[in-house]
Amino acid sequence: MTFKPLGKRVLLERVEEATKTASGIIIPDNAKEKPLSGIVRAVSPKVEEKGLVSVGDKVVFAKYAGTELTLDGKTYVVMTIDDILGVL
Image (cartoon, rainbow, N blue to C red; front, side, top):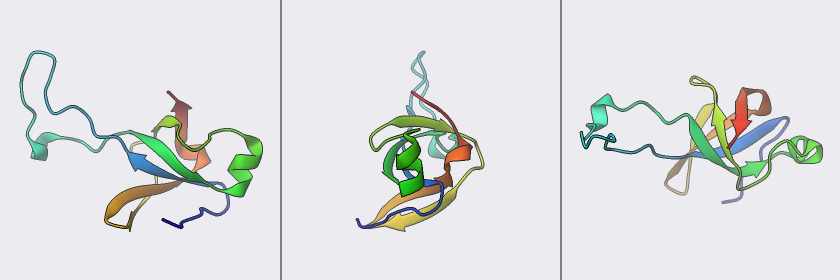
């Protein structure tokens, strides 16, 4: 992958949520929501300069934030640093 975000953007890979509840109930695929957390895979030079997040950090982001992008068969999300709510 050779994608480098521009401006104040980061590239995230969504982290899949559990498919079973604590009590053992299996959640079907059509009832799942998109995960709101992800792992940072690439950062723009401006974000790297400020040191807010770095590659490998697990972050939580806003529900409708970002633009989905498919690279090498994987789906990623490109979003601005302002849409990231926090680092886990």
